Image (cartoon, rainbow, N blue to C red):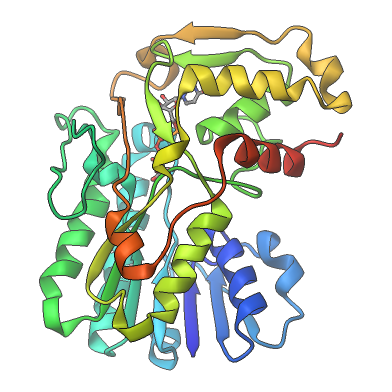
Length: 333
Ligand code: UGA
């Protein structure tokens, strides 16, 4: 099988590429990105072809024509950017990806598309968000945080609307975490786990936005990648024209508990001792932290019934193990 991963140099793309090459010697991978740093260890593999290309500037049509299945993973998925640069999010996450979706339709290629847990927005279903029954709830236009959610949601709707004309699978990652998620050496915002690790490295306080009572279900990257491999394998067409939540409902944690856990675990690393002295946990209003156009998700639990039934998948890495493995990657002992 010839697989095209667009945005293959990112967090999910790099882990997926690694696993594809490990598990399937008869699968060939073309990876498109502007940066090959996260896949530099794969560059010598004979089944791996890295193409340096900016999808905002150049067409990927020739590559789509040559593949059997395309995964367009290139997107900005960092909440701080949703509020500071919403149009950049729209241009990459929506416009550039819509062009790829249309190419998949035109050339009759299978499409595996990353939707997001964020499409459910402020949905209040407490028993788990269901792909076919839960509402997608976003806020007013002035709350720009929702530009990512709504860009993704509209693409989901477009893909779904193609119906019989497009062989698709939509997957929705729920806070996938692991090595290579974000660069913790650089200043600025990133996803919460890597932000806390970066704060510790700089001897800065961990900030709980709006008190830290909001909850997330964190999912280890290897569990997410297992699901993606099953979707790619598509045994008996089990993944076709379906939407799957891919998350770990057992790993639900408040952001306050997350901060406490990470700070506690960080004390085991000798290399961090000198940084930890001045670090404590503080609270900040979201308007001060992100700006006034931010709005938060209080609780987000995936229903993974469909992924269990159709793919035979369930996550196995618990929250402590997930944090340990991630911290081991970023910190020296
Ligand atoms: C994330 C991002 O939108 C995407 O990475 C992705 O599509 C999706 O959700 C997902 O991975 O499922 P969110 O979970 O809100 O959104 O992103 P984080 O930046 O990791 O924030 C989680 C929570 O921690 C938020 O409530 C945020 O306000 C809080 N936070 C973040 C803090 O309390 N302190 C910080 O320093 C950073």
